[in-house]
Picture 1: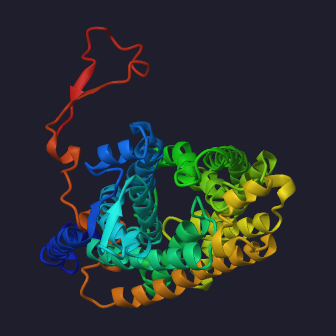
Picture 2: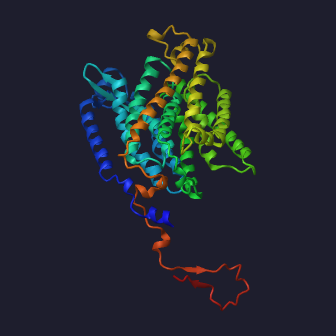
Picture 3: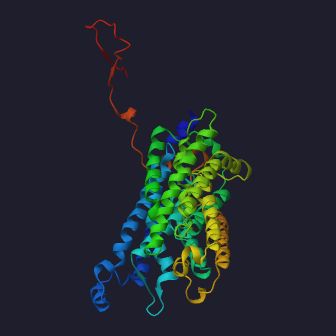
Length: 484
């Protein structure tokens, strides 16, 4: 009773009335100023497009918007609906799962447009960043890294801490992405390396630093119920349906995007069957665990990200999905409990099994497939197109390309672990309003919740079960008033 009363009382350590508005308002004003200084419309979104298309003999159909927007909308739904609802499995943290996901993504995409713009789209002559639909897609990708990290911290950190996680997460993402894609010249259309591997290890490192030895005090809320799991499954289905767009959104026009879509589609289907099989196999009565179905069914798409536009073949995509469904489910059953017990790593959503390991394996898979690429399989022009073998990279051998792909995966892991550890120590400073160990996984700490229906409704008529009272005299009352 004592803990119950404390839970209903004021939570002084979660008081963010000053810090949260300050962070949100100051940082949003900073975004307005920075956008005013740096961000401008690109040539395809500027009003001068009319003159540009006439000068270059183009039509509106040649505007990249018409090619990229359908994929952007799918990716956008994944970021806000898919990731958001996937976080609602905790029985008392659905507001936090969806709401804080909304907050992270809304701030992150603004900061990502700036960070990625400075690295990739800055016009040195004018000092401006010119943005179009592809920049918007990449900004959503950048947000995904921080949302993945959020999964490991779900229910244990304050919204102010999540803003800090996003600020540093987007910054680190932009740097490691520039190193991997520009300096190492790796190919990673679906982001196994730059998104999932980085985001997974970034979140795990933060969670490891923020280890709570007394988190068992909230164990009664560290779980799901029937309805929360059903809501989380909505997130899974949105992610599952739209992931082919995620992996193909920024792939090359034509065959590259088409191939990335097909490979992801096939890998997803395969991972469902193996996740179901392993989930049933590991249960002593052969029952299915909704945690596995919500997460391990997506692992094939994560691992397919880097090699999505490569000639991995359809049966190769099936094999990837097959293996990832097994590895991810095995991780949820055995690895996650081992990590918490041995390494003191508390991973709320199991991002180690859905993002970190599949992303790492996807990066190394891409390295193997790239190293094995040949003109017989791709054609000479196909190799040039898929691996962007132009300029100073024209003579790079495929074995060397494979080596750089593997190096890119290592860079992603290093940025995630080192950057996450540094951010974790920053978040340990006791100024962020995070909840006490016995108040984790509870929306009440940061949200105004509606009163429970049982406390607000007047006494109701309670009808008797007609089967139990089948022999009852017909003149006898068939209902009674519940006494208060």
